[in-house]
Length: 240
Image 1 (cartoon, rainbow, N blue to C red):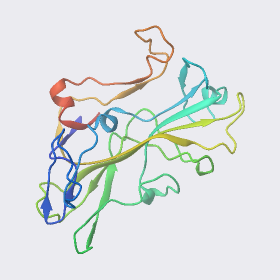
Image 2 (image 1 turned 90 degrees about the vertical axis):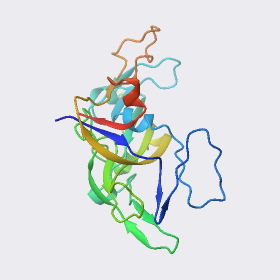
Image 3 (image 1 turned 135 degrees about the horizontal axis):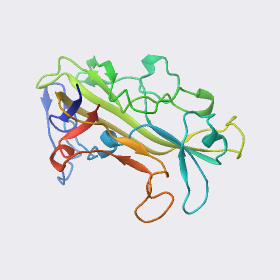
Image 4 (image 1 turned 60 degrees about the horizontal axis):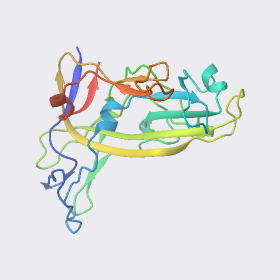
């Protein structure tokens, strides 16, 4: 059965009360109980994991999928790029991972969240951690966490993700050695969710073998998904 995860309310709950801020509303920074959804959520639901080798420092590079850091396209490349939703540290990850997810009330009492599973864990690409290269364990597209006991909450399930677009430079034709991946884009998001079964499919990554409409090498690189506008505006994640 295919599933979709849908947003119930906006960004955050504060124990004892909940506040929602609509898009285009000016933030009241003096209100400590205000939850603000900065992102529209498109990155989290529609940016699947992938690793590319590409020609660095050229105007229109050709991107090729890599199965691993030692795969031929990455071996022959000057530059590598990773799309990653970071894994929980509790799963044996030592670098670039989500340490915890919790809520805290005004008295400082903390309710700790529990990791349930990866979201879209059957994504085509997943990668093992390489701590020496600052390369994170990459699997799925964020995670489902359980956070119970929040006053005013209508669910105990939350979608939690920290997405990182990371790049590294190395010698052409050589395996990556001590080179480090660094973040060029870094976003975090939390959404209360419910799961709804239906005929849905997840987002799929594409490299430069996907022909672009403008004839460029890099124009076809990205992600695609079959989703009508009403679902796009109400979903944080599609799963197969």
